[in-house]
Length: 79
Image 1 (cartoon, rainbow, N blue to C red):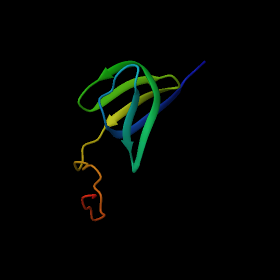
Image 2 (image 1 turned 60 degrees about the horizontal axis):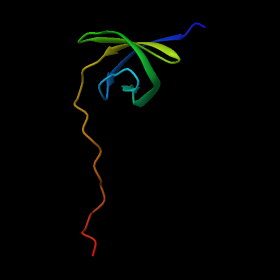
Image 3 (image 1 turned 180 degrees about the vertical axis):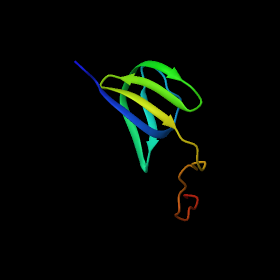
Image 4 (image 1 turned 90 degrees about the horizontal axis):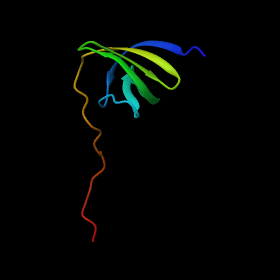
């Protein structure tokens, strides 16, 4: 069986590790892959890895620092 190959520009959200899902930003989307089975290479500007279903070449982009989401509703202590 031949796996699909995806060549993308994005940013890793968390460190890549074998046995876990890869999570990265691609455009305006958060992508979660199937489980990583092999990490072929990692450099400062590109990471190549394979999941159960797909081979990825993720060209790492630099850009604005992403801030965690914050609650926009007023908060008060519960009684």
